[in-house]
Length: 269
Picture 1 (cartoon, rainbow, N blue to C red):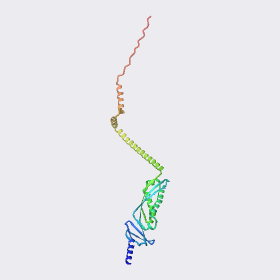
Picture 2: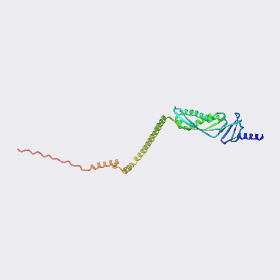
Picture 3: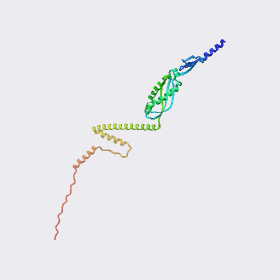
């Protein structure tokens, strides 16, 4: 009889042994009432009278399915959100909420619609990191009573209508054309200023203009051209005209021929 009782005791002891890993905690209930938090390591439960709910304390990554929402400027967008969260209070995660993972996803959906609805399309596309931070704060405040800590929220994908994509492409093209024209105008202005400085230097030193002409003739001659036009300086033309006028004063002038009239001879009777 004693041996049978010993076997029963040993079986009960072995049946009540439990082991929890380092990243796990066991929420123990006795006859439906919260008893304690067990783990990690080896612990014992009273068979039949006690049961447990094991909770994983590691960070959980959940991807929220693509949802369609409307921005502040009435543009429909489809957004996919990824959430990183961890359970910090195992007892609250079991007692305060039925399904932690499902509840976090539902809160994330509501928060995403509310946050995106307060921002324009440009903000959604350009400031995704800031919007993710805002959503994290909203979700974290809602899940705190459940013993859940949301560590990170990111917008993985944002889809906009094709008509809006074409409009944004046209806008981007117009902005690029605007920048190109501004750069070209600035280059022309800078070139004009440099030419003005060069003209001032040439006016101070006229010989520089002749050197520039000679350099231009050299550059033209280096090309494979059949015709070369050489521009004579205006000073040379003026000087040649002056020499021609001066030599013309001393040139002998042609003398006019003298015509003599022969008197008419009277007729004889």
